Length: 462
Image: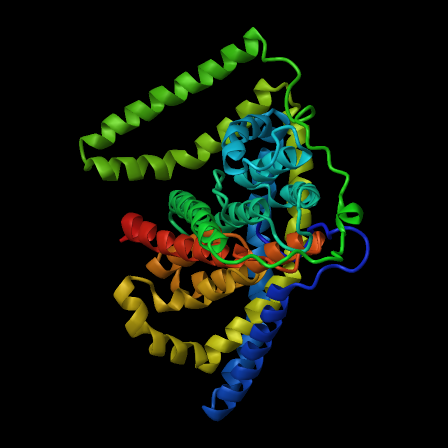
């Protein structure tokens, strides 16, 4: 899963970057937060509180959010690099290839677009969002070369982006977990399974929506193609190697390495069984599972990623350090976005406008089990990953990381991608102006992800 949507991602080809509709909307939202806070705070006599919130919000972005998050982010991104060099990406890509051939029957199996899509979705599934972007741009360019109506999205493009926006994430949302840990959560990784459920539902809804909207559109009269289409694919194709040649070990692990791996797995299995047997004497089965997951999930993930690198003959320490540097760079890139949004949200809350908003919508949201305090997060998530991260951090600080609202906003952060940014970036790379039903399918996926996130939080956290 990508933490920041506007920092560090590659731009599509030479020339001007495409206009970001999501960014434009976010500009208006941020301006409204600031000006609305000043106006309402002045009218209600809360201007001093608004002033204090401006400085405290900016300080919290650095001291409360980014600094405590850096260590964990560096560690887990380092682990992901170890696993990637050990061949984990190769395994996931090969698992995805047969599925994608069924989802994209119009794309030849040996076409470069298929290889790029496999690599893009494999990296997204593993939570390597920044690494997925070049593969995604390459896929869009190659899909455009198969396009009989340039400037109009094809069915394959719509399906690819709907899945891209909603792709299931197998790895834990590291940044969110680190923010929860810094806020004093008793179970920082507790959102992992709810997030996995939410992304699975989101991706399922995205695929189903594409099929339904595609069938509905085909029953309508189709416009004639543009007689003079603008072809931009030739200039937009990034040079990306989509082969798996360098994504894993050249030979399997030797007997000694296999013996070490087997020993670690057996020892963990024995320990897991002993603890489960001990807990079953005191707790109900569901509570046993919950306690086991809370204690074992993260350590087993760490051990598993390291064993993948060990099996692939990766120099795990050097690879870990190289990946940790990427985590540090990412933390530095998202800092300006967090300062801007956290200061604005703190002013908005201090002015009393947020309380007024919650009071107005609570009768509706409470009936469906969605806390009104999480609505700003749900509205901002499709527009800006970094902005939503700031709102999440501020909500966790206000309500507590282990409150129901805290669990919901943290799960929402990982339930879907930044829809408007992804569509603008990828379609802008190939000059597609008519997205057809893509946006509708992606918004349905967002709604499904939010609904599943809320339901999963009710299931796990009451």
